[in-house]
Length: 176
Image 1 (tube, rainbow, N blue to C red):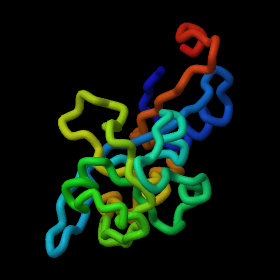
Image 2 (cartoon, helix red, strand yellow; image 1 turned 180 degrees about the horizontal axis):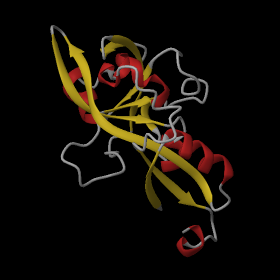
Image 3 (tube, rainbow, N blue to C red; image 1 turned 180 degrees about the vertical axis):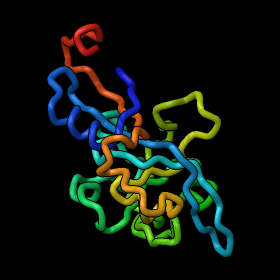
Image 4 (spheres, rainbow, N blue to C red; image 1 turned 90 degrees about the vertical axis):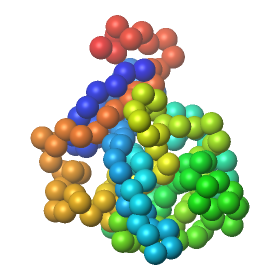
């Protein structure tokens, strides 16, 4: 597997033009403001490409992960996949959380799934593992601190980590 930091536009180009990876996915780890009752807490989250879970081979413990249509264009209906620990600690591991709305960044997000119990994200050496995943196209709703920054269209905004899964039979040397 390979990891690079690129802009969203770079990611789209590499994803669409590559011949050595069976899949490329992008993600950006950051604190996400989530409202619980009368308090807002910053929860470690990731803004991700729609194929994030698919490329990693991670299934939902309950519910499902993102569909291409949900993570395609900005302005879609905001959805979120919860991490197992957040689901257990904040939602008492209730399967009824699927379809519920939670406030993220002051906007309603529909919970569509809970990641598999063992999943802790890709980068394991950071202080806080992610507890929720949101399609990157919903970044303005999820993280108001971005303001008017247009992370989806600026070539120079290098903020996305990209991980690729090599196609069968392709060596890392050939991918480099």
